[in-house]
Amino acid sequence: MLAIKTAISIDKETYNNVENLAKEMNVPRSKLFVIAMKEFIEHRKNRALLEQINAAYSSEPTAEEQTLRKVSRQQHKRVVEREW
Image (cartoon, rainbow, N blue to C red; front, side, top):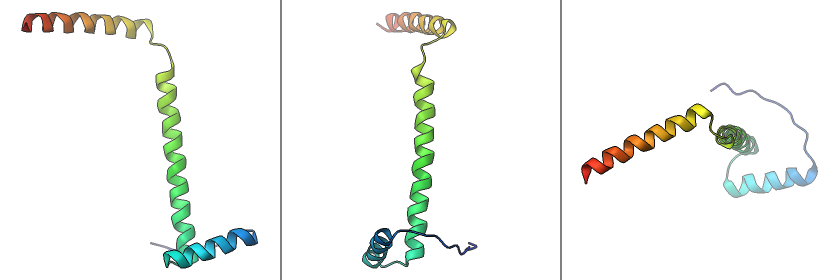
């Protein structure tokens, strides 16, 4: 994997927290930033996906979908009644 160096500016309190956590986890600060950013990116992807799923299920079924559901229920009923 190609590593690219970059400089960032963070406040002293955050720096100290990062430094302490990196020591606790026994990883370099740069590795801790990579871990944190990967988790942040994954979280955003998951959130966007959840929003898409919620949007898809938030709308009322169309007339065509309602008709298909009705036909499906009728067919299911006929199949079940034949089994008994």
